[in-house]
Image 1: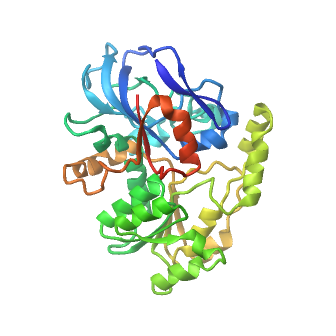
Image 2: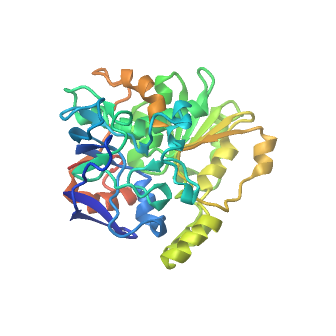
Length: 394
């Protein structure tokens, strides 16, 4: 089969690799019909190379058609249409029973002290072959796949794999009061969708970004979008407070994460680590890695006293300095973590109708064949050609 494989920093390729096969009696083989390119895939493209091996298959946002099932699979059958969550979770352990599928005790990567395994996401998360491919082996065939109906296009459902539950959890964790104000930092795929969900739930949304295409998309949906480039003198916090009665927003969602703009020292550190031998770089990142924290520090500055910061952007540093004095003094609550996909499915599915209140049918900006993956990664990373959300069609 053809698959997108990693070969080094900013070097992904489409190659022929062996077809996956049934290994355990509850495995399922899925013919992938759509697979998303996620912002966190760019962390592999840029920063997390020390935890990858050449030839690793990338991607964790798939849906498709069941092609083959193991002898103990009863929940799905060949021909069924399914979405596959990015968490590899068993659905039956203590953590899964708590709705914490991202902490699944069956697939935790204990060697690295990590939570549940993820499709296509480094040794830190199990080095499970990813979904930007023609075929995907899916474990836990009775509990992991999400069956969806025939008829609507893939775009209606593919975001159940990651974007929708991640954005839904971001808003749930932000927990703004009824009619409250949410500031969303970063209007990429997750920030954009979180804004739509917050608006749908009756909240006021202030979005902050510096990419024209993202700002325009957000404004079209009713977001009060601020261009970060217009506040280079540091008065963004004052502007947001002016919009919120002098207090600041009730909640802030950080949908940016480790690769924020405006953190040149941390960027240089990340770049330096990228040139070290992998074994050295891996040890350094696990013990002393730093993130670009501009977005998180901005969230701390913006949020009102007694407010909540919800972090959905991925961070990976082990030595990140945080303004604990300010967090404590402002009585700020922090909530964060990988999305627990199955925890939110029953709340999201009723919205995936022909009325399309969240605008999922037109959410993708680019739909491209798998063969164009290298160019798609580059365009998305460079934020050019209006690339906000890319869907591969294997």
